[in-house]
Length: 89
Image 1 (cartoon, rainbow, N blue to C red):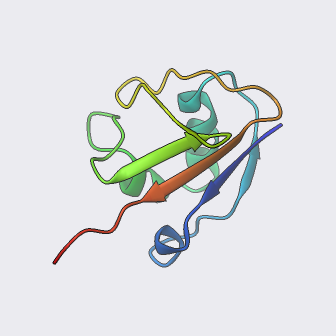
Image 2 (cartoon, helix red, strand yellow):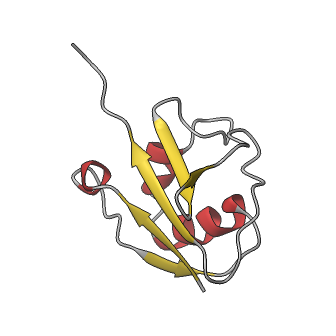
């Protein structure tokens, strides 16, 4: 099973524990996480289902390429890391 992990700053706003999931794409993995923790969806995806501007996902240390469709492939041993970038001045 793949593992999806979230940064501490997301965990301050809503429950965001590491989750073991099945799936062949980033979207499939995230949908399983959102099924368990629905409030996370709004922090990670916009209203069009795309990755929010200040959110980045890494698969085994490599940034995903498809920020809109989330179609990047994962395998059973993949580790996904969801990061919410901080901005401001």
